[in-house]
Length: 125
Length: 125
Image (tube, rainbow over all chains, first blue to last red):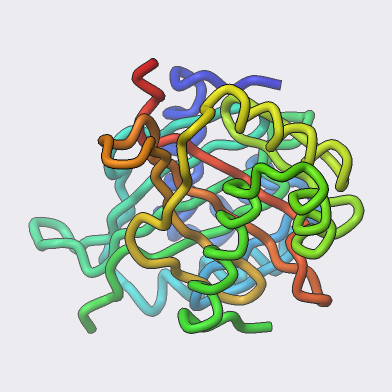
C-alpha cells in the first residue's frame, strides 16, 4: 500500500480539521470518518482508544487550548501505510505554543488505525 | 510504561550497533536480543519481519552501503512505549549519504516490536 505525497497532504489536513472542529456532534462524526473503530492514539501528554476515547481526548485538548488552531507545518511524507506530518498549534496571529510531529498508520479502508505523536516544542503556557 | 531520555539514548545506540555489526553470526545474535520474534520493520526502501527477515534486510543494506557506519544524530526522545531517534549513515570521514528518523515501539520485555523509519535525506549515490 502506498500513500504518495499528493495523498499524504489531504489526509494530514483532514486529521487537523478534526482537531479544529469544536462542534461536538460534528467532531464526533469526523472522528468516526477518520479513525478505525479501535484506533489507538498516543502522544507525550494524552492517550485515547476508539471513537469515544479519541473524541473525548480531542475535546479535552480543545478546552485546554481554547481559541487555538492546528495547522500543517512543513510537508507531509509517506511510504507504505505510514504518513508523517508536522503541525503547529497557535492562537490567531500569535506564535505557536506547540509544534509536533505525528506518525499515523493507515488501515486498508483508508482510515487511521494508529497515531503516535511527538512534541518538537513544549507549550509555553 | 515510560522510557525517559536516559533510557532512550542507549536503546537507540544498541539499535544502531546492530546495523553496524557486519559479522553475520554476531549480527544475528544482536537481532535476536534486540527485536521481538515477530517484530515488524518498515522504511521507505525496505521491509522485514521476524528475526530472519530483519537480519537478512540489515545484511542486504550493509552490502549496499559497504564501509559505511550508522551514528546517532541529535538526541532521542521517548514517551510511553515509543522512542524516536535520528541517525546518519556515512563512510569514515565523509559527509552522510543519508539521514533518517526511526520511531520504535518497545514491547513489555524491552525488545523492539515495531520500527517505522523515515528518510530525511535520500542517499546521494
